[in-house]
Length: 313
Image 1 (cartoon, rainbow, N blue to C red):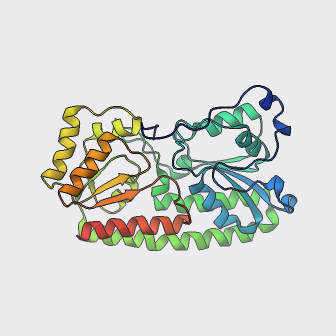
Image 2: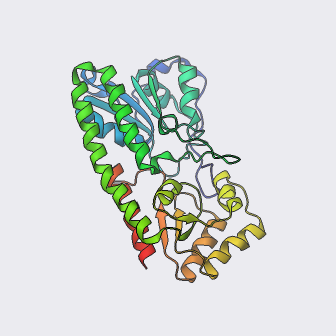
């Protein structure tokens, strides 16, 4: 999801003397609260893991437990992975990582750029590759695979395997924690199945394709003009005709809910939200990074429950 006009720019790439002195640039901390293994007294006994966002960082922490030190580069909603430019702290964290988790699919290309320039060779987990998701015929890949619970389950196994490779003595622990994580995903899939049983074929609108895997698993139909959600995702202006067609979904009550990416806001998305509320159509906010104080399962549980509640109105 490229930068919208209402987002603050991410920190610029730091170059020059500091990059030359990278190893001496001080301690590394992530952009939103991760842990740097180099500062831990138990640094020698934990696996340094770097995740592009706190979504994957949380998964790694659930599966690695006290055996990992996780740095999540992006957790601030004002930082857009599509346009993020790395800092020397990020580069330093990656240089020490034994496991790196990226989304892939063009979402967080800065990870690959940093790995290439840094010359390190950690175990890299690409979530899109793990998912097996591909672009539909004549369409574009929806890279937001963390809203796909079967993919989250596959990732749990892949993370456990990568951690076991780094620390064979604790392989059984990682496998058990991955099983526990996957067990918590099962109720989420049952919730989606219940929505599908009650609302299969119901039309909804979106501002961006962020939640589409969840909506599709719930049997819902995306009625949004593709030109609208594509323009919002690309940070482009929406044509007057496309905006008019989108707003008509609400005034004519052709959709049962608007699922709104609240981390990207602009005049066109705000008009869609206002039109939905004016027509009495529920608005379901979603985000791309973990909200403060939430873990992955709790976050997704809240998302699915909010969707079910909106459709029941």
